[in-house]
Image 1: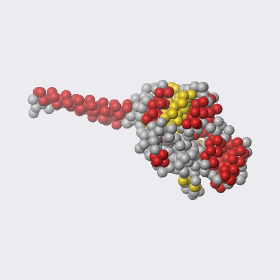
Image 2 (image 1 turned 45 degrees about the vertical axis):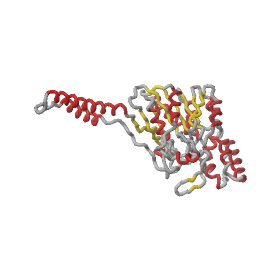
Image 3 (image 1 turned 135 degrees about the horizontal axis):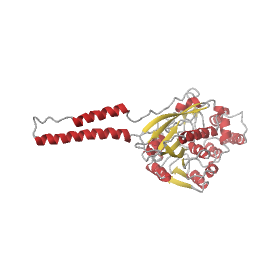
Image 4 (image 1 turned 60 degrees about the vertical axis):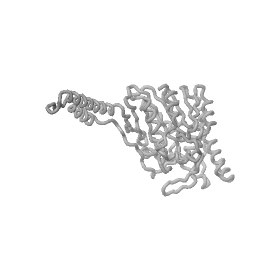
Length: 394
C-alpha cells in the first residue's frame, strides 16, 4: 500500500513521487535511498527495576510508626494508610510487569540478507497463545503500514497489532525485503519475483511454528500483502486467513483499469501491448517513458511472475476459514474485488465495513482521504479488530 494513486513524477536523484488521489500503487520499486525504519522495542521493566521498586515499597510497608507524639487512634489510622500506600506501590509494580505488552525485535536470515520484524507479546499473555503474521502492502510500505513516499505515518499495521494484542493475540509484523530495516535483503530488482515475498512469509510462519509460546497461526495480509498471505497459507499450516483490502482480480486487469484512466490512448495502447508480452513470459526492451515506472526492464521479471496469478483462484485453494474484509470508502480496492474473492472460497466470510478506507481508518468524507494516509493520531476503524477477533474465536 502506498498513497492512493500511481506516481506521476519521478526524480532519479531522490526517488520522490508525487501521487494522484486514486488507484493502486503496485510497483515493487525499492531504492537504496530509502532509510531503514525499525520500531523501538518497548519491553517490560527489567528485573532490577522491578526489584528496586518492590524493595522500596516493602521497606515502606515494614517501617514502624512513631507513636510518641500521636495518640493510639492516630497511630493506628496512619499505619493503615501507610500500609495501603505500600500495597498500592507493590501492586503498581506488578501491574507494570504483567500488563504492558512487549515489542521484541526479531530477525529472519535468508540467502540474500536478513529480514527484520517486530514480535508483539500481549500483556499478561498465557502460553501457548495464538499468533498472527501481519503482511504489509506494496511498494516501500514497512511493518507498521508506513511509506517513505508519504509525508507522514499512519501506523495502521502497528495499531492493528496493538489492537489484536488487547485480545490476547500475539503478532509478528515485518519489513519485506528491500523495505525499511530489511533493505539489505533486496539484492537486484531484476532477481525479485512475486513468489519471493510468499517464500519469505512461509519462512516467517515456520519460524513462528517452531516457537513453543504459540499455538495456532493466523495470516493477516493487507492490500498486496493479502495475496502474499494467501499464497503462504497454502504452503504452511495456519488456522485462519484474513484478507484486508485485497484485490480480487489479476493485476493485469487492475493495471488496465487504472492506467486507462490516466494515460492518453496512444500510451494506453503501448501499455496493453507490453502487458500482453509479459503475460506470455516475454520481456519487452522498448518501454515508452510514461510507462517506465510500471514496466521498466528491471521490474519486468517481477511482473511476469505476478500477472498470471488470479487472487480469487488462489483463495479458492485454501482449506481453512478465510475472512475477506473490505471498507466501503476504500478508493483503491472495491467492494466488487472483495465479493470476487469471497465467491472463490466456499468457507469464506465477507465483512464489509462501512466507512473504512484503504489504510483501515474511518473516513466518511472524500476530503479526508489523503490526510488519513499520513495521520498517526487517527485510530483504526473500531469494527476492524472486533471483526477479526470474532472470526478467529478470540
